[in-house]
Image 1: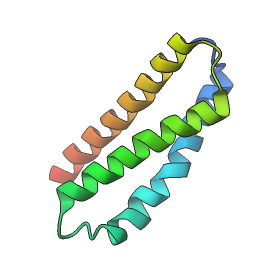
Image 2 (image 1 turned 60 degrees about the horizontal axis):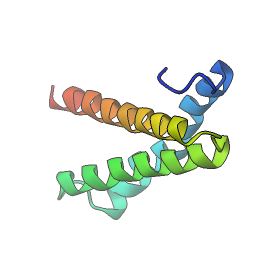
Image 3 (image 1 turned 180 degrees about the vertical axis):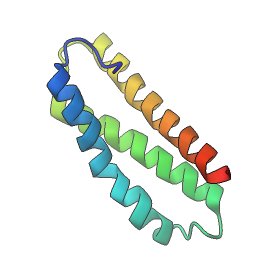
Image 4 (image 1 turned 30 degrees about the horizontal axis):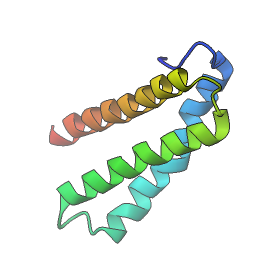
Length: 96
């Protein structure tokens, strides 16, 4: 929703699903095993959320190659914000 207007709506929808599809399996399937999430949940959450945010930003830049630096920073902040919102919703759901 918050991506720059220079990003067409079709590409925005594609990016929303594609970026999540690239990082979600690693965050949910691989990192819990590698980091032994059952013993240190905070460490897992920090690494997993950082991995998702950084990787999605890198993939976004790789795919979109924005022309204007200002728009790039705005888009990256939107991606980071979406990851934070997703994390908070997940935590609220997990605590209930």
